[in-house]
Amino acid sequence: MFNTFIQSFKLRNCYKVNSIIYSIKQIPLIKRILPDSLYKSLILKIIGNIISIIWEISSIFLGKLIYIAAMIFGMMGLYTTNSSGTFLTIFTFLTIAGSLMNTYMFNPTKDKYYAMFIMRMDAKKYTISNYIYAILKVIVGFMPFTLIFGLIANINIGICILMPFFVASCKIIFSTYALNEFERKKVYINENKPVRFIWIIVGICLLLGYGLPYVGVTLSEIVFLVISILTIVVGIFCIKYILKFNKYREMYKSILTEDNMNAKKTAEKQVKDNILNQIDINEKISSNKKRFKYFNDLFIKRHSKILLKSAKKTAVISLFIIIGVIFVTLLNDTFKTKINELLMNSLPFFVFVMYIINRGQVVTQAMFMNCDHSMLTYSFYKTPKSILLLFKERIKSIVGINLLPAIVIGLGLPIILYVTGGTDNIYNYLILFVSIICMSIFFSVHHLILYYLLQPYNINSETKSSTYQIANFITYMACFYIYQAKMPTIYFGIGTIIFAVLYVIISLFIAYRLAPKTFRIRV
Image 1: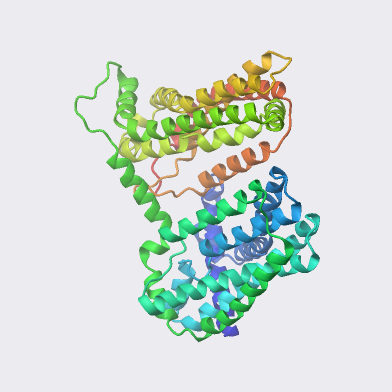
Image 2: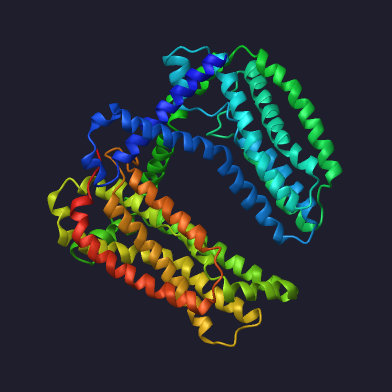
């Protein structure tokens, strides 16, 4: 079994290394320098292996650190209950939810297909050896952080040590349940496509985990200890079933289908079909505009359902949240003070909010699938003048779509600020409104300029640009980092307004200069 694991690890690592080399070759400038023969380069293989090993080690610890720090420890400040009870309550229910969503065994990946059906490895030995490795990674990865954050939360050190084993046992129990379901009913679990009952249980766990401490109910160390010991004992008995199960090959033959392994492609196809189904093909739709203004106006009108539906929903939800916050502040003076302080010093928080609700990426995807996909085959469409004219029209359209929820939020925040006690500096009201509008404009333009400069889609509307994905990830991380900053609203707001204006101006210039070379269909 150990030899099987070593071979499977080498195979998985080789797959990762080739993926890393492929991603590197997709980066502009670099891809022109690096030939395809580099897949055979020993030096690049060594570099790829080093990156792969670093990534493997990071996957053991980094994800667990972020999970415990952000999802559990970081949320404790929202509650007045004791820290140990709050930590244990959130940890317990999130562990149950995570065990249903992340099983390791039922994740349909290509390396499993290559190992079991191309290289004909023993399915049972392959599965069990890799599953043991995955469970060990859970225990080792969680241990330092349950100790560090658990001790800070005043939890007994013995309980802290027990927590990773509780997590591992929960995963083992659910995996055993899933194997038993397949043995009895030939029904398999696909980690990439959770069924409805799993989503329901996960929702209940999240509600209990974060809701119980809010109403003052938490798990004591004794209760958690009893739950953990019972879970670990059951988990130990379940290991016996996993080791005896003999239908792994049959099970993976069902799981490792083309659709399951290419979940991303399947999701992209569903998105494309959804967009096509929502196009309004009414021949009466027209426009009195001319040239590219006419062209863009028709596109927006025919796609109004998919482009405006989400913006309208976000605006309505934002309105209800604002009304709810105002209502709660009128009843709770402590909450009123906290909200006032948030609006006066934590405007960066709304950078992340505006990033999340902005529909720029969805709009550009619709533009490619139902417009640029065909139009990019014509040379006139890629001239600097044409690109700049259409780029300006599209900026107006995307900004207009995203302004709907932005105006609701922008007007709501000054009202909340006034209701919660107001401010001595009257300009704070104006800054709140204008900065929210500018954030919305910035993200609208940002998604569009990324689309024009890094056009990520191929002829089949599949995302093929790793650079585009990296750029989106950097944007996400920047927003996530900024939202944690503390800065007076007036200073951050003015900075945001100036930055947004400059960004729009620079984007127009860059689109004119570079987009004719970059705005094309990928192979």
